[in-house]
Image (cartoon, rainbow, N blue to C red; front, side, top):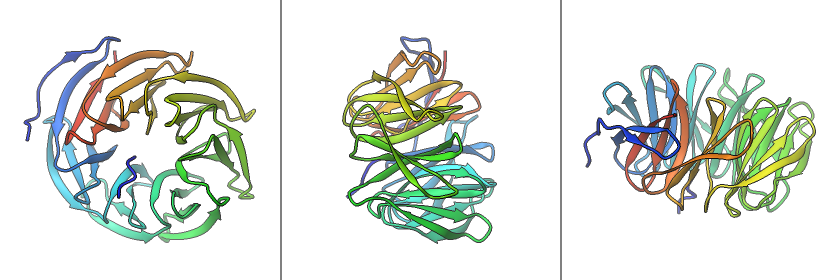
Amino acid sequence: MKFLSSLAALPLVVAAAGGSDVVARVPVPGTPCGVAGAGGAVWVSDATLGRLYRIDPARGTVVKRVPTDPTPCELKLAAGSLWVVTQSGRLDRFDPVTGKRTASIPVGATTYDLTYALGSVWVTNRNGETVQRVSPVTNRVVRTVKFPPGSLPAGIGYTGGALWVGDDHGSFVTRLDPRTYRLTRVRSGGTGASWIAVSGRDVWVSNTKSGSVSRIDAATRRLVSTVKVGISPVNLDVIGGDVWVPDDLGDKVVRIDGATGKVEETLTVGRNPAVVAGVDGDVWVSMFDDSQVWRIRPG
């Protein structure tokens, strides 16, 4: 995610070095940031204009525009709704079929990411130094967990019975016990341990300042491996068993083998890839500075 202070859709197939294909480049206004599949569509947030765009994946075009609170980025489908975090102190909730906003929930300062676990939506607040637990039933914050001074909570995921929270500048990730709210630090293997993706007992961490991705065993709470991926890996995700990593400063998307932890493929993409998401077997990537969303078909 960015910390913020046209072309026609192309019916193309571009082969990449490792076997994946770029099958579409969908133009969108502004600066596309978050991506998620929901309601039979691909939804993309626009961090500059404060909008959600609904993309028809069959046509490769934007078919709906919906206003959000200012500076939206990450969005996820949870509890039957599409949830959008913004850096303007609000968590927005939308109907994923109609696009109607059903709630705007006040949260902490500069909300960065969210995940769904134990019947709640959990959000990180980078500048607020907190993680908040939100009830989808009442649309209210039911718990605020304060992090130590100087922490910058960023990415978040749930596995192994706990929340795992990245730190935008630090070299540790934090394990948050959702029952006791106790915080435990685990070394990440790099600096700028910002973004989190989970799969099984694996916690994958983007070390944005080290240009690497680390793998942590959620059960033992120990670092397993670290692999170099580029200049500045950001909002990674596990898709089809592999880890897909946007390198926003390197204009690359890197694919890591989820079993071996080794780089399997590196794709040159548009300017400033921000977020990846899996939708119906394909990988969708927002190009923050190119006003495009790319659709990649894994090889």
